[in-house]
Length: 540
Image 1 (spheres, rainbow, N blue to C red):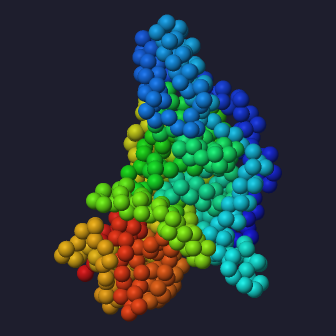
Image 2: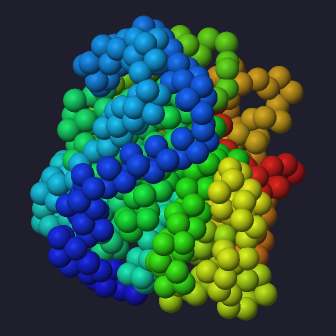
Image 3: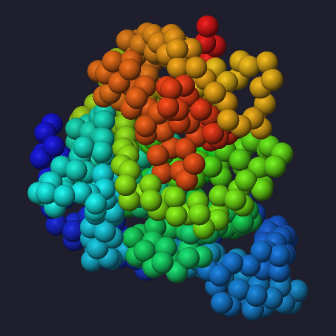
């Protein structure tokens, strides 16, 4: 499929986008969420006494949150509502009436709105931002500075893998994208990638903490992005979250899930996925079949790996993952005016790349699917997914979602992450440099200014590259273009030039004589971790 083909929208009219159709019936959708959550909670807590216990626990935790951890984006009447709820519980107002009020409040907190005009404005701004972020031209000269802006983005924004499959399936079913998660940029990157592929807008759950910032609140609140408040672990809130996401899928909106739950603090590929997240598409597919029979729309799970030469939050994330004495002082130093100026300079003068690798789609039971949406078993035989659901034990569909089917799906997604992970030159350089540093007798994570002789580095680099080639031939990992086609010297040069290019202090630099200097071991460790889990850690 050519680049021009990728840009043809699969749904030409914005009025026909799934997310637009949903928001045209927004009130009906929200009422359906309320009704679904109410029925589910009443079924699980079938007596007034049980409902009162849930309400008392919820109210107590909400009041404690308001007292200890209030946020700017919290509802203005937060305290007043929950104090009134406490009084109503004490007065024994009907438990079902109070539950209805709590559910309606949570639905109102979670929901957001979608504006086609707003989406197009944000999409245009994002496009231009990435053009200048990935390949700055503000200090360039000549014709190239002002022309070929689209080409400039294509050179640095790499869409790899099953792009044609994604477009085909988006026209016959509902996509559930399950990318790796390393940066707050990830949702924007995936959204831009899907727009490049001509897909209609996605919806996803964004952490409520982002809405503390007025700018982010304005942007996300009109993109159909529902809110996730991770402070709230109360039974009614979690039920509403689950039902809200499930019904979005049942209404046919393409969705973005982060099955790891949060950003990878270590920089490694996710290996322990949240079964609850993956259970939501399973439930939505079961409901689709129950409501519409064998002709119901299918959901397709699409693993995606996002890789960056520089993750802006890497410095903080790895220090949250690894507790090192004195790291707090270093964190404070990173926020000073001088380092902010260095960061701004790097943004203006340096470019980078982003790699979006799209894996082979699966159905909700982990079966491989083709472009027509047909499912295949492990032996390559076509199977009837509807019949598979009919053959499930009755309790499987209604019980908690941590079942064998969802767990098997999670294992297949993790395997896909490792298989489609494109090795970046920067990750390879970081991996080799850290492994060599780790072999020193006096090694500790607190070491600074470690020098690695160039000759030693290149020997280890060649050894590691050979091991990676074997994995690549076996289709157990993928390569970025320069790692696939470049010489060892070219790969190494590209890697240490781009590694952490936007950081105020690069984790690794090449000294005048050619030797390598590790300036920030922890941040180097973060980028190193992207290649862990393949069994070739030991460099001989």
